[in-house]
Amino acid sequence: MSVAGAPERPRLFLALWPPPVVTRRLAQVTAALHAQCGGRSVSSENQHITAVFLGAVAATRMSDIECVMRAAACERFELTLDRLQYRKRGGMLWARAAQTPQALDALVRRLRAALAALGFAIEARAFVAHVTLLRDAKKPAAMPQFAPMHWPVDALALVRSTPGHGGARYETVFRVPLAG
Ligand code: ATP
Ligand code: MG
Image 1: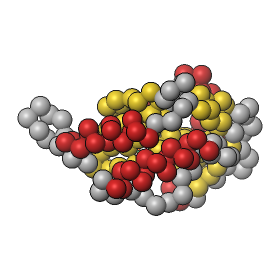
Image 2: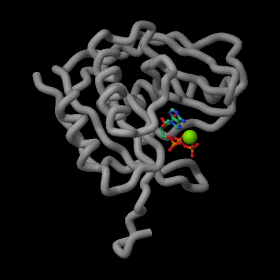
Image 3: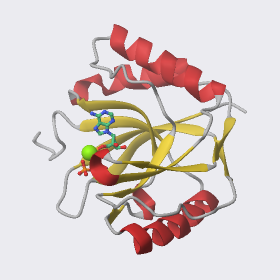
Image 4: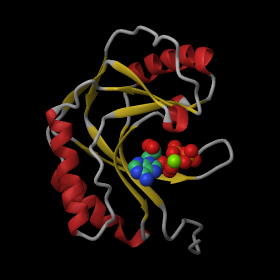
């Protein structure tokens, strides 16, 4: 810990945070799935899409990350969550976009390339736009039906994650607005 109490190597990720209308709809789907499959629900205030996971990073590099985010930022775009997916590994239930929007795919590619060029360790896995709703859940016998959720994406956030007993606590460090 630094003198001020902030970690010197905070755990960071870049994320999209849903608007309240999507958060409310996700809460309904999460509750329906939890009733059927158990597991640990991700709380409404924690539900998000991770664009890039950075992990533990020296706090002094935050300005570099901000520069990359500003340079990579695109125009606003819309994302549609229209599919639920179960992942056996970790018993995860996701709400995802059946099709990742081209603008988001390109944004993630620019962010990964610029961050990797600065020496950050960036994952190489294909990007899948998803919100984790539950962990350690059983496989649902049938997925609940829901109408597609339209999410206008107007900002990219740098988020600090602090591990805790009841799950991680997230704090937005700053948001970079998307033009539009
Ligand atoms: P916890 O790990 O305490 O259960 P969490 O997974 O919500 O909580 P973090 O591990 O800090 O919290 O992760 C923050 C975000 O980054 C989450 O969206 C998580 O899925 C994602 N993430 C974590 N680790 C990785 C990783 N190695 N690669 C890609 N994304 C990751
Ligand atoms: Mg985790």
